[in-house]
Picture (cartoon, rainbow, N blue to C red):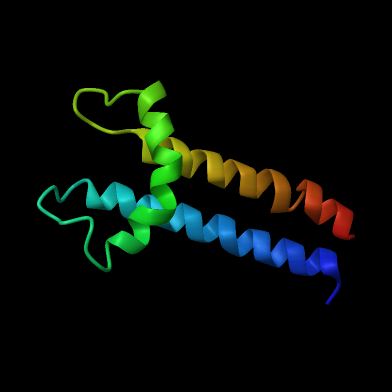
Length: 95
């Protein structure tokens, strides 16, 4: 396995995991009674909150709905596609 292939695989796993964690955060907003500080919910809160807190300052909740996780799902999905998709930058470099 070449270093570039390993980097592609690692980056793909990280971007996919972050996307899934943001989707989990979206689902958690449907259940306001959940105590976010407790396990297993804190596993999704700790890595995503550094991204969401500044975004909430730029884009406040619209009609009481926090759209910042949706924005980050889109950004991470776009980043994954641009870098690792069929015609992604890193995919083309690996060929």
